[in-house]
Image 1: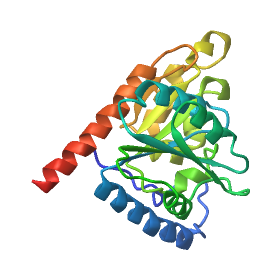
Image 2: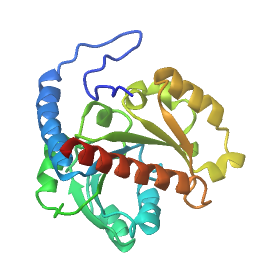
Image 3: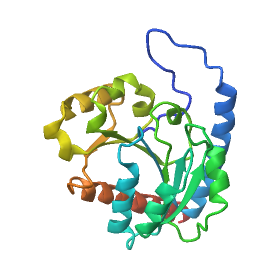
Length: 240
């Protein structure tokens, strides 16, 4: 499947403003490509997880670490404006996690990830996950060198987000509909959100999940392990 460019896809709408930050995005893309090359050389699968604040990224990653931490060597980079709280939660789940404190910036940029990677021992790592800052707007424009971008949308935030924030869903390979255990209490339509998301991006893979309700977590973990194996196999074939 052809990958969508993370930061250069034109927005669609009634009024499109001139992109006055293209120089910044080009600089970001240069660093992102360096990250991508390093990940390829070290055979590390890089996943960028995005969502609004409170959609359940950290809770999902805690459970992911518990379930597959003994099957794959994984580490996590966590972005937030302040505090080490999410990294602490992940370390308590048994995974090596490093907090990136942006100091007020509402997204992670490739140079932030590059600097953080210098503080991580990546020897033998097979899976590196980036938990981006909770925001459906700015992170959509910044390529972090990832192999796959995964976006969570929680049932608690409404099913109209894919059309309101299309760039995020356009540049993602997977959408996780989280907190589906709450569906009976909320005016949220999974069918509607999937239809809107796939209208934006027809190739988007979708999994419904609930960490608390133990729904879809095995499918999510299986997908991760499958992609780790695919990257390992591609590396082996390239060296033959």
